[in-house]
Image (cartoon, rainbow, N blue to C red; front, side, top):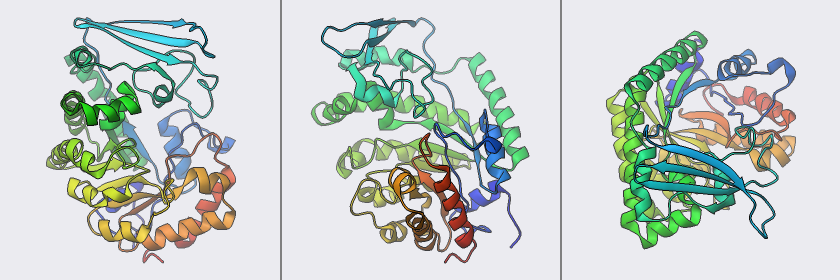
Length: 393
């Protein structure tokens, strides 16, 4: 079989076909490569991975837009009896004020979380969740205010996004890599706004309010998908880190998330594109739900995932010829703490079990971080080269 471009190889995986070989990708988050591979942007990153034979993709992200009348204030307070200062961000909307209060812990700025460059609160941030003193959304009245933070892009912003997307698309075409659009966050967005406890209790005790919150998020996500479908994006991704069974029962997932994900998937497929769903933990009770969603790929499947009942053969049986997998390697336990032989065996198992018949892209879940040893990555690459060719073995 002739060698495919990285884009052709990944499209074959997403269509549950056998490409020339199982692709291998790495998603860096705070990871610093050896000097010869150093990068400063996503294009240089893709070029670096390709220089050592690794696949890559480029990404598009529509921005969140506030109503023009929203005013934002930010300051820091000292809270008596608390160890850390509290960062406060207030969004003054035409319907009233929304306020976030987040403790600035000692690890607020760390190589592990490269998006933080200094003090200050971000509206959507995983780091907020365990450090909240006050979440943004707490009452039904807050939902009317929230709508002013989820506004359609202005005509000028749409033109700017299209120009930026066209530039990234040209770069993806030159590199021969997949172009991926990110614009749907679902429960992740709800938890960023309300915290874990607030979100889950809202779903159980105030389901109408929770459904209204998800509707506000969903309308903005449909707009994002429409924007992405107006670009050459090949693959559109839904975040579902916080939608697994570690947070939600399968029944609650079916009630609140499944219908909205199916609608987005229909939009993506009607636009002739492919749909992915990101979830690294809590996915085993949802395998059949993934199939019902109609998605094309489960992104960041972790073979360890903190659970004791991960069965890759069960995953393969449920997904066979329906849902491809991009994952198969665990980062925090295997790559950070595992032996060379344990790393090699995990690669072999993923290719043998998940790769047979196609539908596998190999990657580490959830990412490679500042503390991921380069030696572990080299071991993955070495083992992958031994077993990557089809027929998978």
